[in-house]
Structure formats: C-alpha cells, structure tokens
Length: 247
Image (cartoon, rainbow, N blue to C red; front, side, top):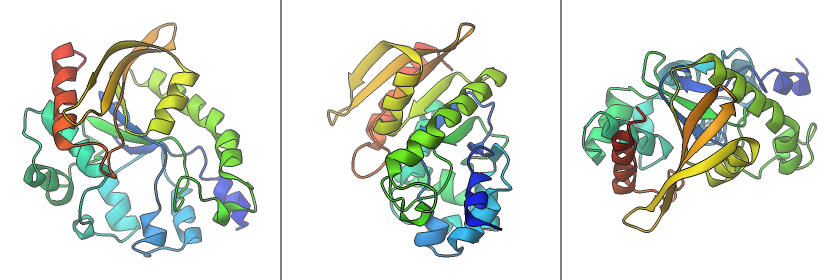
C-alpha cells in the first residue's frame, strides 16, 4: 500500500484507550511510538498498518502486549501511565504509592480497559519520536506545525462529536501544556479554581462549554513525567475533584 495512503487511514479512525464513555478522560498530545523506536518490535509501516485498523477506542493491554508484542512489565521507571494511575487510585480512595501504582498498571493491568472508568485520549493520531519530529512523514508534511495545522481541526471535531455522543464523560484531565492551550483556544472555558501543588506546580480547573447543551470540567496539570508532576500533587488534585463533586 502507498505510504501516504496508509498514513491517511490512521488520522481519524482512533482516539485512544479505554472506556470512551467513562467519566474521566485523560488527554495528551500523542504517542511516542515505543514499538517502533524504543522496543523496536514493529517497523513504522507495520505499526501504521495495525493502527489503520483501530476503532475509536482500543484496549490498552491488548494493543501493547498482543499487537505490539511488548509486555507491560518490561517498562521501568516513571512514565505518563504511572501518573494517570495515581489520579485514578486517588479517586478510588487508595493511596498512590510506587507499589500501588505499579500494581495498577503493570501487574493487574487495569489501565485503559474497555470496561474501565476512564479513557486515555491522544490529540494527534500517529507516532513520532518527539513532538517536533516529522522526518519520517516528510512526504506528506514539511514541518511539525504543518502536520498539526492539517489534522488538528478535524481531530477537535472528532473529539467534540465523541464527547457529545458519550454523556457519562464528566471530567477531562490534560497533562500536556501544549494541548491544554489548544483546547482552551478551541472551546469556551472559564476558570473555576486554581492552586499550586506542594512543589509550586500549577493546576487549573475550568468549566468548558462543548456545546450549548453540554458543559464539562477540564483540569490542566503539569506534564505527567520529566520531573514535572508528582504523585503528591496528583493526589491533591484527585482529592479536590472529589470534594468538588464532579464525579
């Protein structure tokens, strides 16, 4: 199959992992393509062929372990998944420790299940080495900004349509500053509450109008990784959300 056509087939068929009608959505910019560049279990073309068959929501464990042939236990150290788990554990009234988090993600494998209470949404649809890398797609886009401009509007349309169709979604949690800015520029939002965590990192809770008939809460956090977010900060955020009565 022509490479450009293959990429095109991956742009709007998939949104993320988990229960698309779950009360909590976590929202990031994009995946890093671990199966291609880190674990190297798939070529770029093989990964895109798999991705072109994805449904809007996929089971996280199934994709990583069955399709990409990457055991979740093989991941070491902190990553985005750990902080998502810390937030979810707090909502369940469980202390988010290194042990409980690792059990949630890598032992019990509860993250991104189709019957879970959450959904992990990616704004951009295809894997890249970094948020500025575009070299492998140079036959389609010459710059990263061109790629984002080309697909961003339709991706927001897809997100909006999906949120309107799934009425049980109550809270969106954005852990990427670039996405948070784009989201607030795209939708009408107003600040409900803001605070700093014990390390001085800012959290902001917004009320967002998806349509005239649909309002949601939108929580922006420090990035879930690279030393930005902390488990304690995530715990404070989860507890505030619970006290606010959103969920």
